Each structure stands twice: as C-alpha cells, then as structure tokens.
Length: 389
Ligand SMILES: Cc1ncc(COP(=O)(O)O)c(C=O)c1O
Image 1: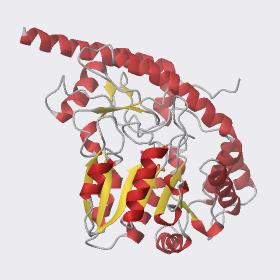
Image 2: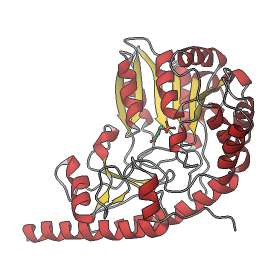
Image 3: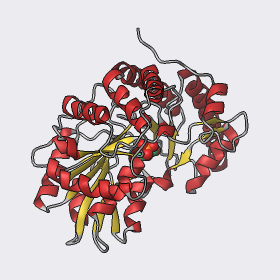
C-alpha cells in the first residue's frame, strides 16, 4: 500500500513556523489551514531537476508543461475542457481571488458571498469599492438558494462560493449547483468558485465544478491550488480558469504586480497533477479516518453536536451552548486544552459561536488534541451544570 510519511509533532513544529508561531511548547496547533504532511516526493524531484536544468528564467505565458497538465486534469477530473489561453498560473489561490475581483468588479457593483467562508473572499471586493452581502448557508451548511435570490440587487455582478467549503466542510451537490447556475443565468451573473479543497471529499462524495454545468463556463471563474492537499503552502502556486477575455485581463494585471509565479513552482505543480493521484487518494482516505475519530470525540461532550464534515480538513462545531462570547471558546481551548483552534466569527456571518479545527495532521496528534478538547469542554459543561443546579 502506498503511504505518506507521518512526521512527529517536533518535526511539524520546526518546519511550520507560522502554524506554531508564538505558541508554548505543549500546545498543539490546529489553527492555520496548513497540512502537516510532507509534499509528494515527485514534486520535490521535479523542482530539483528544474533547477539543475536551468528552468528558472522568465516564462511569460506560463510554463508549458504546467498549463498542459492543468488542461488534462481539468478535463479528466473537473469535466471542464479549456484552451491554453483560459488558464493563468497564479501566486497561490490568494492571487486568483485578488485578480478575479479586480477584473470583474467596478466600484459600486455588488457581490453576494455565501458564508461562512474564507475571509478574503468576503473582504477583498471592498478594496475595489464594491458592496458585499453575506448570505448564510442553511443549518446543514448547504446553499440557501432562496436567500441568495432574495439578496440580489440590480448591481449584483458575482456570486462567490467556496466548494468544498472552508470552514464548514460542506461539499455542494450537483443539484444545488444546478439551481445556483439557474439563478446566475437568469440574472446574468458571474459565479466565482474557490475550489482549493477539491480533492478532499468524503463518504464517496464527488466534487462538482460549477463551471462544468451547461451554460456556466462563460460565466464562471474557478480557482484551484496546491497549498492544502499537496502540502505546498510556501511554494505559492495555483491557477485560475475562465474565458480567455477574463484571463487576458488577469494576466495584464499580474504582469504589473508579480510578472508571473515561479517557474520551478509551476514545474513542481505539473508533477503534482501528473504523478500524484496516489498521494491525494491516500490523504483523502487517511483524513476520513482522522475526521471520524475527531468528530466522535467531540460528540461525547453533552450539549454539543459536531456535524461530520463532507470534505476539506476542517471540523466546525458549534460551541455556543458552552460559551457566551465568540472568541471565548477558542481562548478557553488554548488555555485549558493547550490546543489552538480558530474562532468561527472570523469566517463571516454564520461562523459565530463555532470554532474551526484543522485536522490535517497524523492521527495520533489529532487523537491527543481531541481528548484534550473533550476533557476541557467536559470541565466547562460540568461547571455550568453545577451553577444551574
Ligand atoms: C478557501 C481558501 N482559498 C484560498 C486560500 C489561500 O490559498 P493559497 O495558499 O493557495 O494562496 C485558502 C487558505 O487557507 C483557503 O482556505
């Protein structure tokens, strides 16, 4: 069986300075959305060979083997046939988020963002003087299509989704995406879909790219990346897919900022797409087990219900029965359990009362963290229970 190397907590702490920044030695970080697993060997080898063979000069149109690997993968996995000029390599998905809003929005236009979600998807349009309305998902994390339709104004230009969703772990179904597509077509809107977590879907679910649905390609911008599933966060590489006229505008913008992302990174990313399905398959199956263990532990706490995430590597339990204020839960867990998690209110409306727990770590680290969280929350529950009785 193919497997992926399991690093120790000590190695993780040393090699992930931002994830462990400022934390005491006994703290486990399940905060920053970073993988604890080494990136695939094939990616490292491709990048080393790229350097040795002098592949570190300007390649203004993108590295050809990366564009080709992305085109093949888009067809094979996402069912999106694209031409060469419809893909732009980006400096991570973050760069794609900036470019999308930059080229699609004019001041005064309106964006609907489905929340909770990754904060820059909500915040960035405001830098371009656009208005944002956050539309909360339903209780089960799926799209509230009636609320989306109700939030439309004459100025609405884009509906933004993150699929699979950071932080709720929801994987949108084909049916709900078809209904979202109907709204986009009826009101002549763009959909911006951040699909960074596309490889991580559990219980046999299949990721569906909204751009693959009939009539949607020409009105969708989709961002893909490598930071999460391939553990390549510091390499800063991703790609964005859209109609050629949009990609041309994005390329012009990016040339003025970064010229283009690193050629060595693009060559590494091509290897990830061409050679590393074994790696993403392993990770997905492994993380499904980690997820089950974590969620079972959280559901041991009286009064708390933790939904099984359908994808990504985040659990997003609602801890509001045990805490009055939003940041209180994360602060309490850091102090009492020595586990860093993120407060849910940073992810927009709908995040309040929750915490986000990143479980992209070796099983034994998550087991240790989960027991610490359970014990700390039980203590909290017992203290509240005593006060009430
Ligand atoms: C949904 C989502 N989009 C984009 C990003 C940024 O990704 P990248 O490192 O590829 O820029 C993140 C990182 O947490 C994310 O969760």
